[in-house]
Image 1 (cartoon, one colour):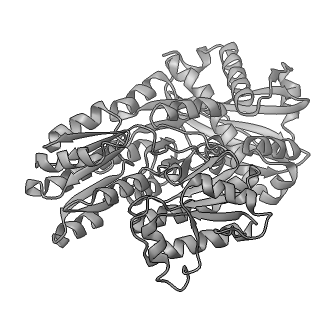
Image 2: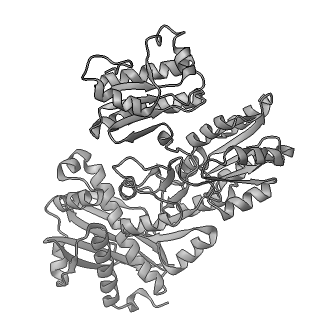
Length: 387
Length: 170
């Protein structure tokens, strides 16, 4: 989620200069031309920082600042004065009302960016696609759950990941932990007494540190009231108990924007390999589908012209998986990528039962598959290679 | 607090020079060189014959006054374009309103820097909102109780005139 900077100045020139100063940073600039508009916009779309002029018609900056500080929902928003009104006495008077910083015009754009950068974590926009975290990168997950068994279940279920799962039982402990650590994702049980989960959510969302941290609610499957309340409040998602750990893992990966493609795709010498896991639930199918086209393109771009769909771990073939494989085969045909299949006896047997898969032929091992490409110039072998 | 008449002219001169130089170098990366001239030739300089954009901002408090910054239209458009980061053609498309706003803001910053220095010297004042005059063949005349000081600056070969009118304040 992008940071929001609210620029309040009656001069359109200044607002344009500010927009220009932040154009290379990952943030949105909101604009208001006086204090009345500024307050209305701050209420409608609470910004992460406000750049505020003093001398404005309708409502000046001092009045707007005073009103901001009087409103519980807005008083914590950091304000940086950006004004021609300098002078020691003036600065002191306004600083007493409560500002994070004070910039006297004229100003250099880089100073403005520097000062705002002290308040929010400005990130430059790069031309290259943002290199997100992958599933192999460490992450901190906080679980706020008063039942130790649930925390233990989550820790056990995710122990194969590089994620550190920390459990706390109260909202106070959760706030302290978030203050002392950079948490990547938070799971909160919705059954905490006295609606504490929702209170904690609101508190976390007012802190700059956790404003954009994904927060999931943990709820009993049948507790639709709590789930609905969480969704209305703005929880990132819900995980229902009893917990489906693979499903939870997929949700967490998606929420943290992790690149999970390495779970399923790799290149090995001259081969592009798509490996499907033992259990291919809907979230797995969805993940693989998301990455498929790009990964195939990358492989072709790097000079690879052979693909293997590796199903040797797959326990069960269902319609969703068949559709995925058909889609993958079509994608390969679209880019003239030859492909073949590796399977196991169970998968082979299941394929016989479907019209679309009856003629599929499988190799038993990756090496066999690799060799079959070499033999393809000769008349058809036992496991024909498709292209 | 000394009366306005007891404040030496050199203080006003150095303060306004510093303000113009700071604003134009910071916002437009253009150095401004003060051009001392006789008062008679200065008065003549304010007889406007060619199209001008004049930004004005007031200040009120221990001193009351107005500062007018006179720029010819081409220079005003150039400054506005530089401030907004747009080409001459794009500036033409944006029109007079964009130029007015830009010059108003440059004037705001100049007067702000000027009066902030005076505030720190014991003459606290606050700013009014900017306004713009456009035209040619006009002359701004102060009332008899106001003092007038005129300063000229060379900015990249173009003359910027600052006309400072003041009266004692509160």
